[in-house]
Image 1 (spheres, helix red, strand yellow):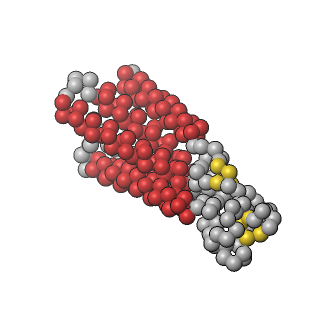
Image 2 (cartoon, one colour; image 1 turned 30 degrees about the horizontal axis):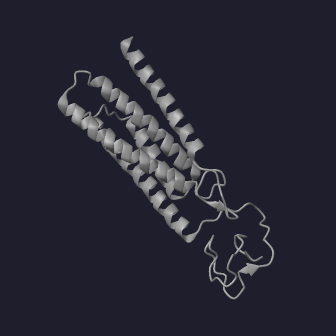
Image 3 (cartoon, one colour; image 1 turned 135 degrees about the horizontal axis):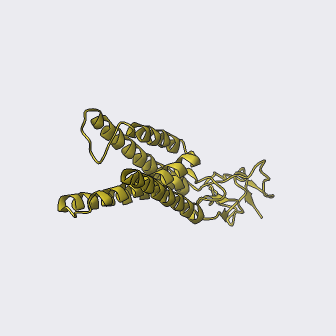
Length: 216
C-alpha cells in the first residue's frame, strides 16, 4: 500500500502526480511512502477544490458582517443628528463595532468569529422583525412592503453568515467539510441548531424585556 507523505491518504494509483485528497504533488515517488505517516497532531486537510470553497465561504461571511456593520454604523450616525431610522440610536455603534470586529475575525478564518457572528445576527434579525411587527399592528401597506424587503435581506444575510461560519470551521475535526486522513468529519447540523436555539431564546428575552418595560 502506498500513502501520501503529506496527509497520509492511501493512494489507489501509485503513478498519480497529485494526491487525490490533499492535492500535494507526489512526483517520482518523493511524495509517497510505504507506511502511513504518523503526524505529531491530528491534521485536517482540504483538497484544492475544498480550499477554493472555503475561501468563497469566508468571503461571503466577511461581506455579510461588513454590510451589517456599515449599515448599523450609518443608522447610528444619523441618530446623532436626530434622524431616527428604524428606531436607531447612538448605542448602535456598539453593534456596528462588534460586527466589524467579527468581520476581521472571519477574514482570518477564526471559528469563534464565524459562530458568534451567525448567532448574533440571528438574535438581532429575529428581535428586529418582532419589534417591527409589533410597531405595525395597524397594517400600513408601505410598512408591510418595507418589512417584506427587510425579511428577504435578513434571509440572504443569515445564509451568508452561516456559510461564513462553515468556512471558518473548515479545518475543524468536528464540524466541517474537511477530512482527516480521508475520513469525512461530522456535519455542522448540531452546531447550527444550537446557534439558532440560542438566537431565538435571546431574541425572545430581549423582546419581552423591551415591552414589559414599556408597559410599566
